[in-house]
Image (cartoon, rainbow, N blue to C red; front, top):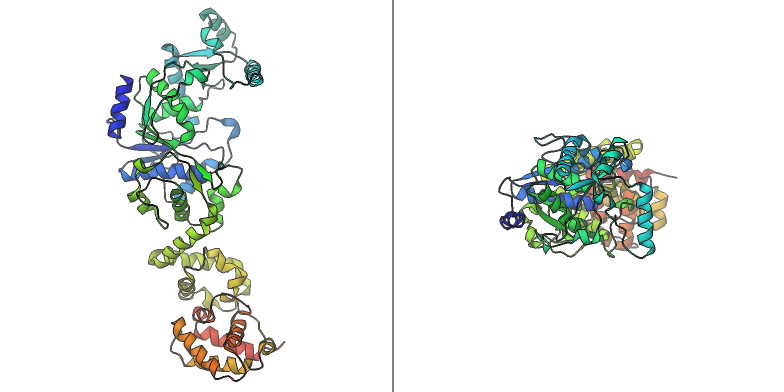
Length: 508
């Protein structure tokens, strides 16, 4: 009966009882990293493509490893990434609470029900005994497992220990002959958990559940239709299905996502500080950049192209396209992905306005005490800078570094410095002031370059490269950077003339 029900649910791709409801259920024992973001994203895409519900549930039953602030930070990062949950502790919902430590009564009820039906038992084994079992197994080259000793304890012994208040846990009786199940990604699977594992603890001595009981109880009560989680849980699914059967509940459909690995095939580790989403945000990466690169690294889409945003990911997502192969993530490409998404933001009128304001605040924070002309903080000026630099820069932060300081700060370059480059420096500056002053506007780098070459050709001693070097130095006090023509268009006619005039008059 259990197998036929599961087959029916899997074949139709959604439980007949409920609409599509998926959950992302991280543990707040750390902050959200790229692996967690990917799991959340696939759940989100699956739900939104089907008009379903995306739930954030915090599994905080491991009380010894909780990190202060992690729970709020996880939801903050989901919201920043554009994947705000439909139901969560912050947003509420009809199936809360959404934090496991606030649902202890449900787990106690489930554990009591399983005791009543004979599917679980009290275990009084001390930590010392369990540690001895572990060491003995390791000494003999075996995988450590509980020997199920307390499963066979006489009822009188159990009653006597309970009356004496002996510390205990509740363990679930694993059945031999595990039922096969169909995973949406890995296909038919069957794991004889009873052959390789001892009976698992489902309720700890402190009254908190383990993951095995908590996720089953919560998935049932929250009416989860599909569970999309990491493939590391694939071998535990038979255990969870046994719990569903023991509780006489219909399980959700499972889809186990292949691992997201580093480019060299090693696992992403929480000890890699640079994989945390907050770190990427602080470095100036956009949320769509992260979503793009983690999906580009794997599978699940009809085509694989760079530059997709969230709405495109939703429309193009296809769970049947997810392969069982691990996804290899090349973070060296992150800057290139961000450059593409920055360019798309600049080209979008609404998003460009937000970029302009954000860059203005960055400039104020970085250079405020050195800014002489507030015109560099005007929206029109900053917008012109962004338009000219799109496709060249990977983040707004680049525009705050030394290479681009000339955009915000008037350089102090003397006439003597320019004349060290060529004795015709004053003639060059004068000629370009006349050129810019006579132009209606500096709008085209091509046209401006032609005019500058024409001016250069009229000089007797100075080559074109030296001509441009003098201009670059006068305008930016630098030896390299964007083209001189682009530099002039970015600054605008008035600022170009002011800087060139200043260089003529400034003496050391």
